[in-house]
Amino acid sequence: MSTTRSIRAAVLAFVREHDLLPPGPLVVAVSGGADSTALLLLLTDLAPQLGLDLHVAHFDHRLRPRESAKDAQFVADLAQSRGATIRIGRAERPPTSEDDARELRYAFLRRAAREVGAARIATGHTRDDQAETVLLHATRGSGLAGLAGMRPLRDDIVRPLLAIGRADTEALCREAKIEPRTDRSNADLKYARNRIRRKVLPELERINPQARAALARLADAAAAAADATRFAAERSLGAATTTTGIALDRLDVETRDDALAIAWARATGRSLAAKHRAALAALASSRDGSATCDLPGGRAIREYATLRIETSPAESVQPAEPVALARDRPVSWGGWTFTLASHGAGTFSSPAPADGTLVVRSRRPGDRLAGRLRIKVQDLFTDAKVPVRARATHPLVTTASGAVWWVVGLKHADGAADPGRWIVATPPPAQIEALRRYTRNIDSGDRHMADG
Image 1 (tube, rainbow, N blue to C red):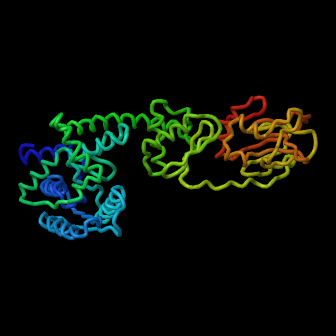
Image 2 (tube, rainbow, N blue to C red):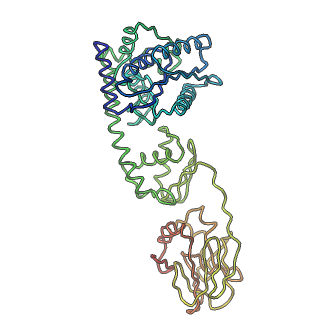
Image 3 (cartoon, one colour):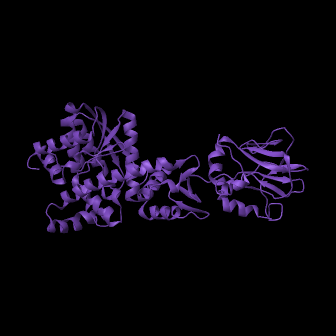
C-alpha cells in the first residue's frame, strides 16, 4: 500500500464486502505486536462510521514471564489512549503446544465477548499470515478447505486485516508513532510457522516478489471451490440422513467423503485430519456386515449400508423377558404388540401352528427355525442385513418346547399351520423405518408388512 489512507480504505472495503462488523460491541484481540496494534488503531478510526463499541482483550500465555507484564501494560495503555475498555486474561499454566495456546486464548476471548455482549471477535491476522497458513496446510497434505486458509468470517471470529500485509500494519504503527511490542519467540525456528516465514517465503519471493499476495489469491479461489463442494455435500447429507443413521447408498459419490466429514463435525464438534477422513471413507466404502472405526471425538459404526456416529459408549440393551401369547388378547413385548387372531391383518403376520402354547422371546445361542430346513436364526439375520445392535431385541415366536416358529418379519417355519390361527405383530413406531429397510432383503412370501 502506498499510503496509510489507502490502507484504511482497503480495510473498510474488505469489511463491507464480507459484512464483518455489524454495529454494537466488538472484542478486539490485542497482543501488543504490530498487527494487533494496527488493528486497534484502524478500528478506533472506523468505529464511529461503523457504529462499533470496542473492548480490548489481551491474553498472557505465561510463555514469556519477564516480558508478559510489560506486554499487558502496553496494551492497557494503548486501549486507554484509544478510549476502549480492557480485559486481561492469564493462563493457569503454560500451554504445552501451539494448539493448546490457541485453545486457551480463544476460550478467553469468547468469555470476554459473552461478558460485554459482543457477537464477534476481531483478530489481527494479515495477508502474510494467510500465505503462511496456506503453505503450512499444503505441506501437511490438506485438501481444498485447508488451502482456503483463514476465512474473513468463521463462526464468531472476524479478520479485517486479511486485506493488507505486515508491511502495512508496520506503516500504520509508524504513522501513529507507536513502537509495538516484539515477541522474541517469533524468531524461534523450532516453530514450523516461523520456518515458513523466515526460510520458505523469502525463497518463494525470489521467484515471485508478490508470492504472498499470490498465495492469498490461491486461498480465495480454494475457499470459493470449498464452499461450493460443502454446499453440495450438505445437500447430499440431508437427503441421506434418516432416524437410524446415514444411508450410505443415498450419498452422492462425488461428495460422499465431504458429507461424512461434515456429519462427523456436527456430531462430535471435531474436524477430521486427512488420515482420519480417509479412515472414515474406507469404512463407508464397504457394505458387508458390520464394522467400526474409532476417530477423534467418537466412533463410527457401519451396519451394512447405514453409518452411525456415537460420541459416547453405547449402552447395552437388555431384551425383554419371554411372554406367552393369548387368543384375541394383545400382549406387549419390548415395545411390540402381539395378538393371536383369526386373520392375518397387521403390520407383520404369520400363520400359527395348529395347537400349543406360543411364546415371544429374544434369540438364544444356537437358535434354528423349526421344520425341515433348520435354518440358523443367525443366518437369517445376516442375510436380511439386520444390524447387529438390533438382533438382541428382535422378537422370535417359539413353541412351548422352545423351537423357533417365526423370526418376526423374516421367516416362519414350514410346519403344519392352522388357517384360522394367526400371529399378528405390531412394532414400536420408532422402529418401523428400520424394519422396512431390512425386511425388504428377504422373499416377500415369508412376511407381510402393511404400508400404513
